[in-house]
Image (cartoon, rainbow, N blue to C red; front, side, top):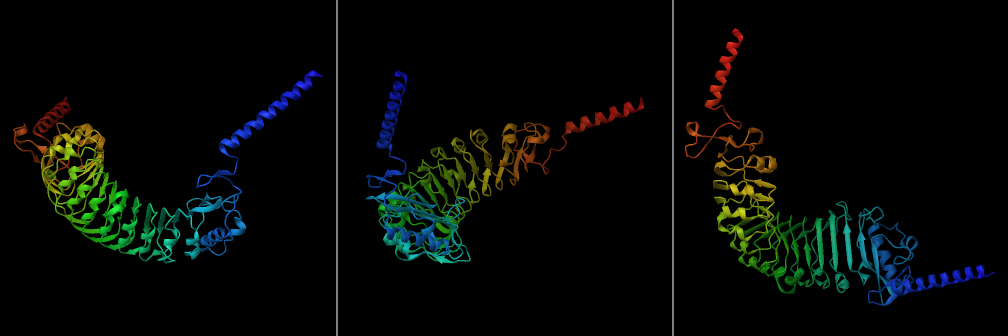
Amino acid sequence: MRQPQSRKLLQLQALSLLLFIIALHSRLHGCSGQGEAADGSASTAAAPMEEKEKRALYAAIEGFVGKGWNGSALYPDPCGWSPIQGVSCDLFNGLWYPTVMSIGPVLDNSLRCSADAKFSPQLFDLKRLKTLSFYSCFPATNPTPIPATSWDKLAGSLETLEFRTNPGLTGPIPASLGRLSSLQSLVFVENNLTGAVPAELGSLVRLRRLVLSGNGLSGQIPASLGNGHFAEQLLIMDVSNNSLTGSLPSSLGGLKGLLKMDLSNNLLQGSLPPELAGLGSLTLLDLRNNSFTGGLPSFLQGMASLQDLLLSNNPLGGSLGQLGWERLRGLATLDLSNLGLVGAIPESMAALTRLRFLALDHNRLTGDVPARLAELPNIGALYLNGNNLTGTLQFSPAFYQRMGRRFASWDNPGLCYSNAAVDAAHAPPGVTVCKVAGGVGDGRKPEASSSLMATSSASNLINGFCFFLWMVATSLL
């Protein structure tokens, strides 16, 4: 009889221990369905949601996905046991509030916009909304402007506003977006927005990311984007692939913390203002495909943090010797093609030991190609084609073999290579073999031959004649 009692005692002890562990876990981590409110107070998944907030959520989503969407039946508890894909909620003072709304075909079960999607007024009644994102929601067959009003209702909460790949999103960027005082990220990419960049965006004092690329925006870049508290917070500025005109405002030099500036593929012109020297934290500067002039600005050599400098296809002019390239040792990408550059390639460019990509093609560069460029330890692409470079390429066969078509030096009429150092299989494409006067090197400048392959030298002719005589003698035996 003692054994069953002992077993029962052990079972009771085990049950007590299990209950203790569950209680301890609940105290430390909360039970399933529990969480912590945004204000720090503990709460459960059974916390209520205001009916007004729930109705606003259903109506806002219905405006985008269509009237056939019955949110109250499909998702009776949208912040609890029946969550909506793309909608996230947080607790405030014991109540659930939607804080994230993402519309578009991101996942298989994501909310997708209907062919006649529209903005519902109830969207602006979601008073705790932090993130609002639309992807591929407005097709070209449904031209829809961004609402011009009511954004001030979300001024205290909205931190992220994104519209990506919406060809039907038309009209201007509303100036009222400048009232979103809590906004940290404003991303309008590949839409069909037109008009000027509103100067009111300069009032977004907490903005850290401004991306307006791939639209039809026109006019000048407003000076307000480089002033005041806006300039202190901004990290990324991308207004590429638009139709912006005019010169750069000098106030952009006030963006002291800016890491990336992309103004490429616009119609911008004029000299680069010297005030841009204030962009000391910049890691990427992309000004490609504009109409900037005035040469390579000297302030570039003071941007020690630069990793990617992309200036191609601008009529800048000037020479590479204007800058002390050894001061830009962090550069990994340097694109200076088609700038109208003249003069020689300076030896100091060989000090860019982190460089992976160097494009100097389609300029008017002259002189020899520094042999030390082949010694750059990380170089993966080197383009020198389309210049007036002369002399003998001093690169090794291993360099040509490793680079392949990622090394280009054709269309330099005075440039050649020595077939004594490089065989035809690894010869640089489009570059002729050097002719040495008198059959031996005499110290004179090499001349380029007219063919891509090596022509027969005098010694080759003699060897061929001897071989012919041997064949004749053999046939007579």
